[in-house]
Image (tube, rainbow, N blue to C red; front, top):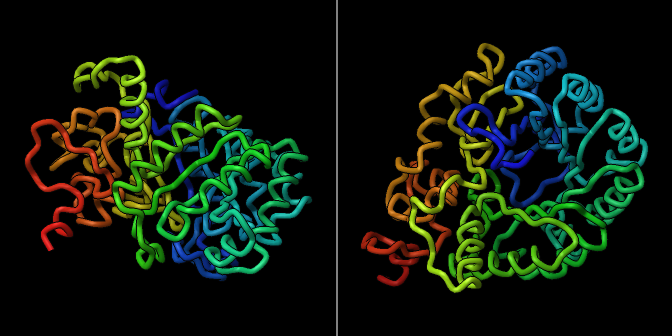
Length: 366
């Protein structure tokens, strides 16, 4: 199943559950402001199972990503993987690179039916990765866990954060992704939330060059490439393919069905205490799974419905002919303006005929 196969008005392609905010690491970009201790209000094992039962109502083979914090900080993590798998869900996990992620834990997750393991690599060496992750030894633990995951038969995904501190590491990380025999490289462009507010994003023009480079990587590499919170990657890909064919960029009507997902449109997030958001990076709650169905919240809440309407977008994104294939990062718009329908400040593209403000206007004026 691919994003284009999913009616995103009815179900998310990706449903993320933040199992806990507990984590041994202190990563500089952490959205969750993770701490070593578990929160007393986390969903219990029985509440978690009820939530997974409800998520099954989205339909066959619903993808559920177990995230954190560190999911393995919960003693019931493997039990819940097995439970979700038995209910017909496609369960994946994004654990932290710590000593918890040992060979025995990975074998247990594989036996429980885990469909994919995603590990974060934010530097091409131990020095750069460990400095970003706030824990000496994290790089070595992550690489060893990646190799152990492959031995256990678990498909591997590598997640990487792009910001001013990490962007020059991308070529070395790309080589590591290949060496680890990963199936997918998920490249996340910083959204200034949590501890990430203290980090500098790459400028829009640099972000554009990175997406162009990632497109080249996707053509050459043995693994797939996707971006998170940088949906303009799809616009860059479409422009490149059209340019290669010697044709002009299509109009909004010619673009047709959108191929990706953004916050609230093909994506939903459930927090450690059960609050439902369009994304973990857009923490505007529409309800709680303890008292309401995640299915109903996703399908019927006004915020989700607005986020699924490309014609509701404002500013540059609303005027853009690529709004149905891109739509901009709604999370970044919310984090920077408080309005989830505003323009994405990371995208440098200038829509035809648009005469409003553009990224960098304030800096140029000064």
